[in-house]
Length: 217
Image (cartoon, rainbow, N blue to C red):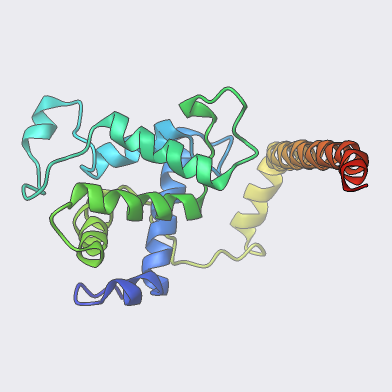
């Protein structure tokens, strides 16, 4: 259970809170880019920020109904700069040499970091802890869309379940294989980039070593 009286340290280690934030994260993953469920692009984060009134909505009617009237909402460029800064610090392999906002991969831990980083910009007159609490309780948890977990168990041995599985077995198998292939391709691309980087560094070190040795002589 999420208690509003919790400190930010208690909130950050609360399993119920992490589960709720995960349901929020995966909701936007499913609705805005279902081909890359493990990452967001910056456009997905911008949409999330609009929904939670971190960024002012483009809809004038919605903008006028601002639940959080005690703070100024951020602009899109400010949020994009934070995304770019986080991406640069993380040194993601997914980012191309020629940076563009859509090339940034925002994973779940990045999502949490961005919320924390934006809190002090959104609630600039509060302490760091108070700002973090407010953005969670007043923006993210209050306004964000999220998946609704299913509480009922599904027995695959039931007659209805067997019929559904048989009916959709082939397309489900194709979907499963498609995502396995994509995941394997991404993994291979990442490994190839890492090997290229290691090879380049090894080559540089090899070239430098004789020159250093001669200077020492």
